[in-house]
Image 1 (spheres, rainbow, N blue to C red):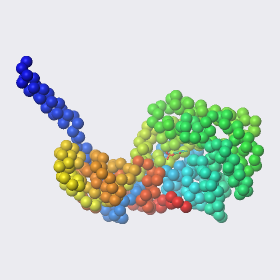
Image 2 (cartoon, protein in one colour):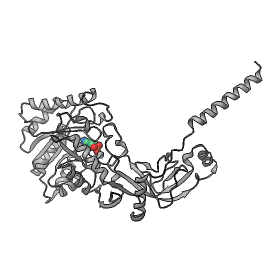
Image 3 (cartoon, rainbow, N blue to C red):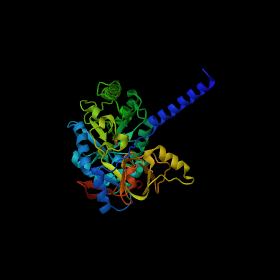
Image 4 (tube, protein in one colour):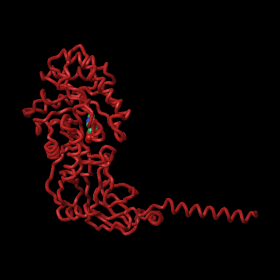
Length: 423
Ligand SMILES: Cc1ncc(COP(=O)(O)O)c(C=O)c1O
C-alpha cells in the first residue's frame, strides 16, 4: 500500500473516532422545567415568600415518612427521634406526637438544655459521649427546669475513664446519673470494643448508689445499603456482637438486671432491617423523616423527600457567560446543551443538590452570595421565580435558613423556629 493511502486511511479513522466521541460523550439535554409540584411551590413563594432563601418542610410527605418509620419500629420497640437531624422544637413536637413517642436522642449540650426545658416528659439518651465539662454545663444551666435529669436522662459513656469522670461529677453535684454504655458493634467509631470491657464499668456502677446502668447504644451505619435482611452476614455480625454485650451483662457477678434496659441502635438508613428482630428494643431515626439526598438509600425507598431549599432567581442570561475571554464559555455551551442558559440565585453553595429545575450541571464556580446555575434551553424561568434544592443532610443545614416554612396542600401553613447552635 502506498504511504499516501495509509495516511489518508489513518486520518479517516481519527475523524471517525472523533465523530463517535462527540456522539457518545456529548451530554444530552437533561433540563426540564418545574413539574406540577414545584410549579405550585414556585407560585406560592412568589405570592407569599419572603424573597430570600427558605427551607420548606412538606407536612403531608413528612407525615407519610413518620408513618413508614413507626410501622417499621412496630409496637414492641421504642422509636427514638434523633434531635440533631430534626433541630426544631415544633418539628420535634409534631414528630413525637404523630409517632406517639417520648424518646429522644440528643448530641449537643445546648440542644440538651433546650429539650429539657420544652420536653420535660421526654426520655433522653445522649447520642455521643459528652465531655464531662459539657455534662457539668448542662446541670449548671438546668436551673429550675422541671426536668427530672436523674430519672429521664441517660448519659452515654464509652470508656471506664469517662465513667469515673461522670462518677466524680455525680458526687460533686450530689446527683444520681443514669448511664448508657456505647458499644462497638462493628462501626469502629469508639465504644466498648468487646463484652469483657464491660466488667469494669458494671463493677463501678454496681458499687455506687449514684450510678445506674440503663442500657447500651450500638450504632451501625456501616450497614447502610446492605441489600438484605436479618440473614445478611453483616447484619448477623452486628446482632451477634450486640447480643455478646447483653449476655455478658446477664452473667456479670454484680447481678445487674436486664429488666427495663434500653438496647438502642439503628438510624434512618438501617432501621427497617430490624422489623422482625428482638435484640434491640429501641431504634433511632431522624433524617428519614425529611429524607435529604444522602438518605436515598436502600431501606428508605418508601420515604419521600420532604425538605427543600427554595431560593429566588436574581438574574438570567440566555447563554453561558464567564468572567474574561468569551471563548471558553462559547466552546462550553456549544458542547454541553445544559449550559446554554445562566441564572444567578440568591445565596448558594449549600450542602444540597438541585431538584428543580432538573438537569443542572455542576457549577463552574461557587458563590455563597450569588451562585451561578447553568441550565439547558428547556428551562425557562424568570427573575423572581424560585429554584429548589434538596439538602444532602438535614443536620446543620436546617439551621441555616431561620424558621422552617411548613407547606401543606400548596399553602404555607406555619413557621417553625429552629434550635440555636450555641447556648
Ligand atoms: C448514635 C446515632 N444513632 C442514630 C443516628 C441516626 O440519625 P439519622 O436517622 O438522622 O441518620 C446517628 C446519626 O448520626 C447517630 O450518631
